[in-house]
Image (cartoon, rainbow, N blue to C red):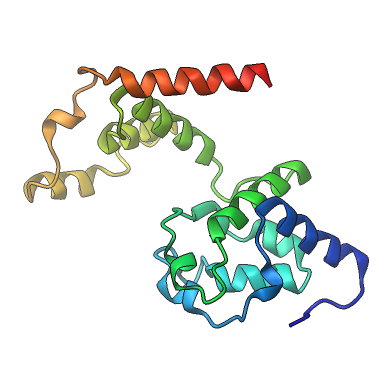
Length: 189
């Protein structure tokens, strides 16, 4: 199903996304199974179906500013339900690269800080210590009490461990070695 006319710019954008992602978006049926099962899909975050439609119709600016690909949690549900097996995580990654090259700012201004804190937690503890990540993020973004009410509720219900809030603790060195190897390979390129 061809949605684009012969205009060169919209077709070039579609081709760039398809080449970077390795996904054939022109095969999309627009059935909605992806968005119907997407855990981040809301009124604000339209989901994979709307994002693919924007790409197919050549709406480059709309696609690059769509929050769907910023919030994608790479759960794979959309691809599992997709009758043509489009991997939206790969499309989201391609859009991220294209947006960075075009100078499009992230939907969330501090998203890279959160990613950095998350990865540092995984590197040190071989898993994300969510409470520490959120606390560090809130302090670094000058909102130290932002999630205090939710934290207290989780503590009352026993869903939050006080031990996880304590900084430090032993780390698992295996993840640190993996991160060190990735940094070394990146430098060699």
